[in-house]
Length: 321
Image 1 (spheres, rainbow, N blue to C red):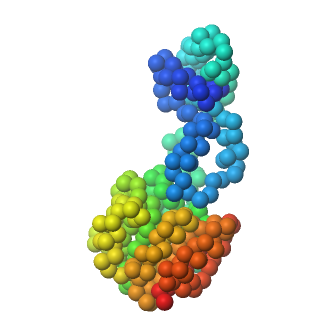
Image 2 (image 1 turned 90 degrees about the horizontal axis):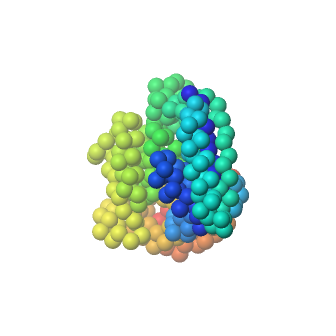
Image 3 (image 1 turned 120 degrees about the horizontal axis):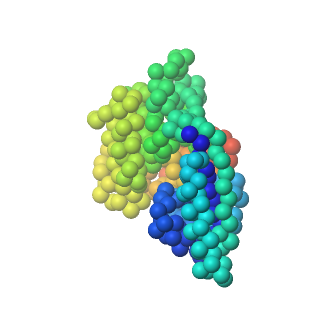
């Protein structure tokens, strides 16, 4: 089935009003693209990001528009939509709502329900690992260890350099039979990797409550469940009961794949999670933040034992002094 993509140009001040008028007119599943809303979201969540893709920033510069989709044959619906937009123009002559220009593009026929899967081919990582989407779980890996994920659940698919570096470091540093703590666990990909490499147990912690169920599901696809894998939800910076629970034991390997600011804030408590022979792996660190992170780890009594680089990102390994 072919679809029409309709784009209506509006303004930051008017985008909500235009969306409300479209909804009242019977048009649902609207996609709002607005620079000011995007920037507000980033500001509200500043503690949880450290890098914004420049191409995305350029693409959204000055953007304020609404998209919706109609079947190619829906001529009557398209005509009614044009009339609705013209009525909006007439009722707002000062262009508070923006130009309200309507652009119609014919999208090529494709299997939308299945086509997105092409973006997730099997991905070899390091020397021994292979990340597989759930629908290719049985594909031949050439002897590599399977890390099976449902990418439709998001929260980390192994494509990002920071995640890849942690997985590569674990290949070299994880001692089978040990315990793993994964802070900022997301999809559970690093916990699954630890278990696949021979860890006896893994605990995953994430601030997003949806991640807890997602990590459990992904672990189950790999044959892991409680007590091998345990998931918690909480902010490791502010949830004292959670941190007390986590600090009640020591872990053989601790993974912190978040962002520099969170790693720096966590640095004082990280030694309490480690034994002298334990390994800490921190990633999600931009090149420009590397010195700050190293200084924070050293200031907390940790010795940096190695650094990996990939693209603009760094991964740091450390031990307790």
